[in-house]
View 1: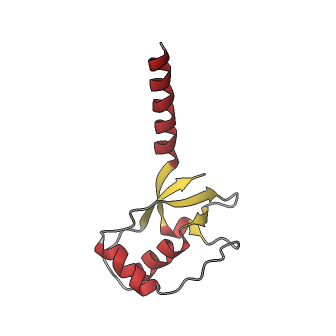
View 2: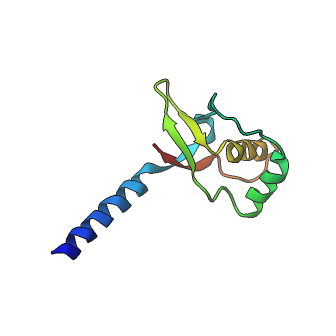
Length: 100
């Protein structure tokens, strides 16, 4: 009995995490006023993202009441992908995001 309860709990946690990850268009992702990281060397970072075939680590975002999402973590990844799009590189506009 105990094993099945743990199995069910694991399935629920797994489903919750999977359901919270969405591919979101870059146009819907908005910078946070609380971001304190400097957006430097974006071109170099963009080349790394391009070389690995896109963004592999989820951004962390939260829905905005006005629509779209505020970036909690991932400002540099978004900026790098935007740089690639602006420079007409073949990269997806959709970024993996954990929605909180």
